Image 1 (cartoon, rainbow over the protein chains, first blue to last red):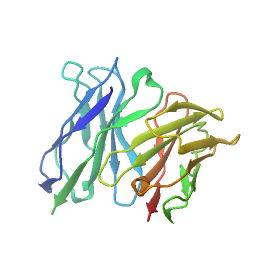
Image 2 (cartoon, one colour; image 1 turned 180 degrees about the vertical axis):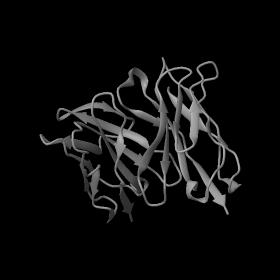
Image 3 (spheres, chains in turn red, green; image 1 turned 90 degrees about the horizontal axis):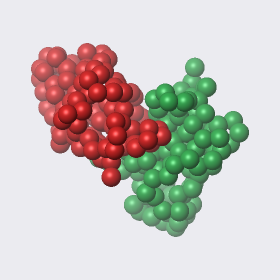
Length: 113
Length: 111
């Protein structure tokens, strides 16, 4: 079945460090791919998305490129801030793009001043 | 413009009881999906409602049921609660092929 796998956390970085969170997916066809962020005590917020191969999603300094050949959608940011501390979820749309989202297990990011 | 609103925010129930969670979608959205997020895990899809019908369902037992009303709001019902049903329940709404907007969730604790 369809699945999404993220790198295990937690990830601890110093402010202004470079961030990479790996995400790979297994799906039938060509799903849309998403990164969501969850701050403590809150729901999920869409961070960025890509709907087809080679698309790059970007928002707030975060970027991710849809790589069909490696079935990956790694999240990157060049210089993290303390305010980026949160849990990050990679997700893929289910088969047939019916709206069902399949999430990875989440990666906790802690940024220290 | 209010986003997705869920009620209640927190809830404590006893094993074997029944619970109803409520969701009001974002204005203009007509599709509602429900997810269960266990502690430390990613959200798991429960089901999706569109035009008052269950359109798609995840791998959850029949104890989980739902409803969508003509105003697009939705309820999630869970019968015969188990300790393992303790989780954050997230509602998401959408319109057409646009991405989901999530609510802040209802934290259910079963004791």
